[in-house]
Length: 78
Image: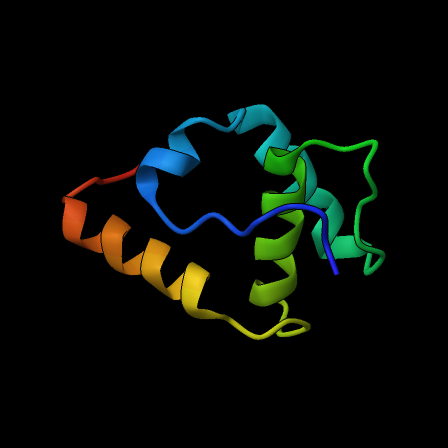
């Protein structure tokens, strides 16, 4: 179990470092080991999303809420 709380809102997501999210996502595509406390919450969020994209982790209420909020926001691209 992670020490971090899952990101569930766009406001929360905007507080995370984009580069750390991307670094975590990249590692999550190739590494199954959950990041430890030496990594940031943004890094963990990226790793977690990669695990869900790979089908190694189930989407949960937090990830579903974030997707719904993103899709409802009208944001296109990044």
